[in-house]
Amino acid sequence: MAVKNFEEIAVRAKASGQKNRVVIAGADAENILLGAFHAQDDGFAELTLVGEAGKVLPMLDRLGLKDKPYRLVETYPGDNATQVAIEIINKGEGDILMRGNVQTREFLMPLLDKRNNLRTKRLLTHIDIVSMPEYPKLIAIGDVTVTVEPNRNQKKDIINNMVDTLRFVEDEKPNIALLALVEQTSFHMKDTIDAHELVHEHEKSPIADCNLVGPIAYDLILSKEAARLKNYDCQYCGDFDGIIAPSLLAGNLIVKGWQAHAHAQTCGVVVGAKIRVAITSRSDAPEVAYNSLAFCTLLPKDCPYL
Image (cartoon, rainbow, N blue to C red; front, side, top):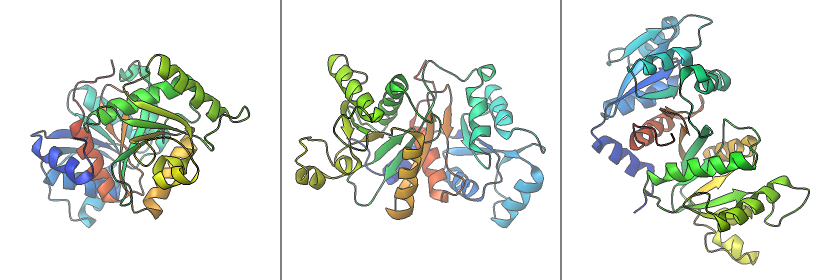
């Protein structure tokens, strides 16, 4: 039975027996520290903090965390904290890479750098898992950070990454929506054409083990009532497990809107690499960092994307 909320994910993480060595790149990030130390208190994380000591140590003191166990690896102005964190993991001293107070580009570029040997045959994809009070289950959305305007082949990779990720919350055959402005194919809306072609290809030779629908508008994805009122015949409306966003902007805006206006709980992971990667916004609540590490604990240590 599929996991329905983050409370269930946390229970599984705590029961896993794993104490993942989490390496936080740019550890002077208040809410990320609070969430990560909560995960450590709950027994499924062990923290290595990478960052400038003059920024990290005063923050730990202010947050009441200075006497808790952690390892500090000091960086200096001009260093890329993510590169330092990856080198720690590549030496076998870490299990999960976590974004702290670093710019998105500075975090992603070392992951993409072939010299760090973290790439696989898959496209890297940032997937957010979301729980909202008015939606009956967890729902995933991607990409929300990495690929700005995914082409059709990149969308196939994102579909595969999302389906594989949802499998670890026991979503065996998820319902995946290809988001577009409208549900009709229109020659001047590339996203509708891509969605139509992807669904057609999926019907002939499945892209992944999922039910794939598109093009489909946002209201139809989330609401059975919207489908009834618009006479849209699709049994998965209001019951989708994942949304493939047509662009990074669309995916990012939706997640931030859910957080700000729909009381959503979220977590973020980058999948498609050889290591597990937790990623949150620096403005996210501590719970997002905690949820992200709990979810990473459900993912396999050995990369499934090779």
